[in-house]
Length: 386
Image (cartoon, rainbow, N blue to C red; front, side):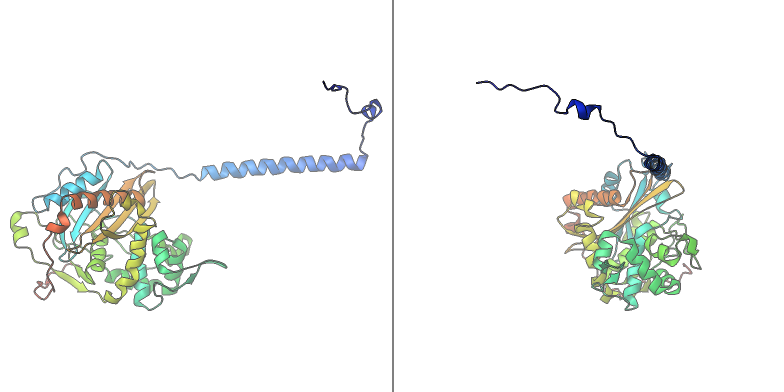
């Protein structure tokens, strides 16, 4: 059996010959709609073009060779230094490693950059702001801050994901005077080192930045208007790691200086009860937040830290400050990168992970001397250091 399919049109000749014509009013309306659609398409295309013009361009170079050339290394820990050099690779940046229980600089790769006047701290400033808000009993780690009609967030989540709106809200609640007071207490705006040759001073504004630049809110979320050095950040994170002692950082340059090393306390910070409140957020940043790239290379020990990414004048900055919470002892690592698009906070965190991996593989944590039980014999500082 076969089926026969007719190829004739289903439309009759009569209907095919019929024409539909619009009246004058209909033609006028269709013409108006056509012109309106043309304008809408042109506006949409213009808006898309306008957005492309705001694409950020960077002139900084994220890569560099021989960044450690000229470093003074005789007083550094050779295992730590080699781990830092290998982890940094050819990235344009610096790696700083500190013993938090004494303030001794164990390694400083690319000392010219590490000792410079620093750069915008980006989101690492949030550590200082969090401690200020906790000190003022403004929040606990569980306090929910309203960020909109339907959005609320606590400190742990805000640190983990580096939420800008949360810390802008904290900054406005605290006000510039309190934000500035605590920032200086934690070491910003003053030299972090004790007689470290070539160290430059970071800056902290004496007044709140202009509202056109975001005011105190942007100071607390991006560090707008602030210049922080790797040493300043390292000293602050060391105080968090050791329970509240802000040491002067010291960089021994000879074997004799290492043998005769004596810690020097700048001041004691009343933050010991607050550290559990902030440490959960720092641990969460590494576990599932902005610093989870640490875990690509290392997850044998708990790492707590904070990333930072921002840009200024064509240069992008990437920060990561952290410490290893080991059973034997703790080491603070600060990675600061500068350059273009490949430079950002998670990249600095990845470098830190590589460094922790190398230290772990060389049994550094097991071989590290047990820190002193107290600081009763710590030598007082009589210098006029700021």
